Image 1 (cartoon, rainbow, N blue to C red):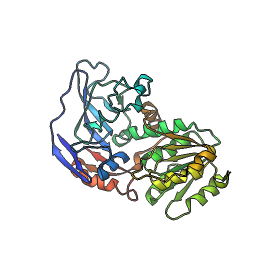
Image 2: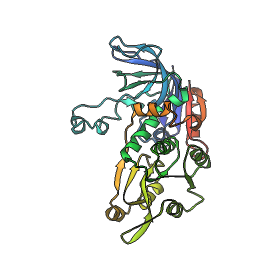
Image 3: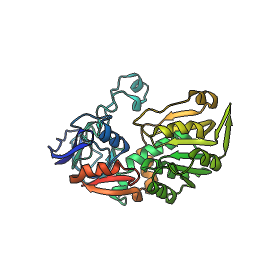
Image 4: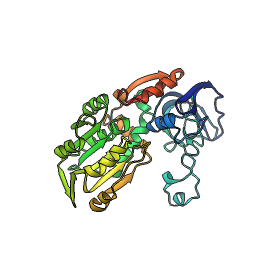
Length: 348
């Protein structure tokens, strides 16, 4: 089968490798499409989270073509997606059922340690329906289905924020996850939704997807505009904005720093973006404003499928580019340009 193999920063090569062998507890999927995640971009561009020889890809949709004899509730011909990871089962976090914090998480999971979906076939070991494999609704198109995983992250992020209808929400970054976060907050009917971005394309799509206000982070004074839109938030010895919830889906040091000024005292900051560089933090803002600060790792696949099936979240228009596996390098290079793309897909 063809697969896109990582060799080093900005060096990915399409090669022919063996199709994985299917064990008695495993399933094999023929991959139809796989999106390039922001974490894949970090890996491709800088070598973060990855080793030479890795096949990335965890935002996929496909069709089951082979099922191990012990797997009884997943069948050949089913369309599906999923994510496999092998938790250690014995660490402090596993013993306390905080599996997403297991140090083993990214050592043996789909696209991290194990082969990912930038290949014609994908093995899901020890497959479990509605745990590591989720059936895709019959009427869901291939590209939307391949966004189930990132939307699951967005759904998990919003749930952690515990929004109320009177909340004023600022979302920094309008890639697919940021846009999905915004659409899910809209489904919660929050009072105000503000999106900041550096890309005209992404701002336009955010506005069309339901944002109340959009701010061009390179052309406008972001803090002053946020104050205008959600109110001025005085706090000890200074003043910021009055956002009840701030979600950083940009992963830029500037966004990280701004989040502590945007949030009101006692508000919530959720980090889901992954910065490549460290941000400078003024800890006095944490002391004086006492915000609730959360890192958002993990996803809710069942909720994601429900949101996409009901059209409360729509992602098809966010897929801006599609490449065949033969042009994997070109696909990654396009995803590296946030001003020109939102979600880039590799199609098989």
